[in-house]
Length: 111
Length: 115
Image (cartoon, rainbow over all chains, first blue to last red; front, top):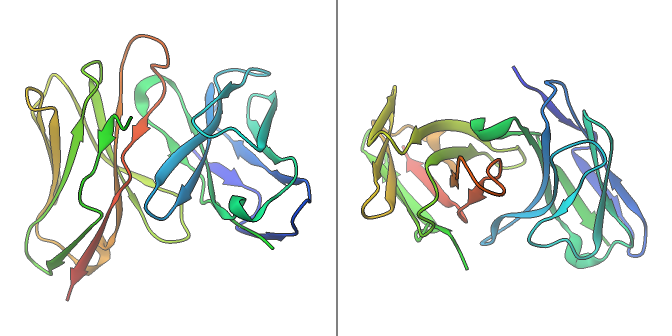
């Protein structure tokens, strides 16, 4: 089974901090994604990557950046955390049209 | 503009009865559809999918129906069980064209199965 691992289940950070969310997949998938999930808003795409060192903006990239130095690892960076970035963050990976495999999520609280 | 719509934010069903979750889409390029189930504090997990060459796909208690002319799909759960209580996301993708590896998600429907 494909496994997507997010490094932290819960994080609490202070406003203005730089925050790194890490995601690793073990099935050699080309595509990786970062979403955030908020009540009533569903899953919103922040960034995605279809190859090493490649990245594309999703629907809500403002305030975020990403890094993909290795195929298996896709990092989401909050440059200066704000309270409106308190959310559940979900990483996913996929190969072509097969559909996504999600990680367990990181619940981030910015205080 | 929402390309995948789940118009019911929530649904309550008695245990043992049928749950029907609906999803509409607007993009005629979509030809592959999936349902994901999500429990609180966990990532979504794949439930069932259907290709546009079919109009029905069944997996145990779960059946997905696709009506291409109406751009509508539905997920049927029979019989519903308390463990089915979760948020269900409908998703769609296009097998060709730019972004063909991307899924577009609906906003989700929270299903509550009452014992």
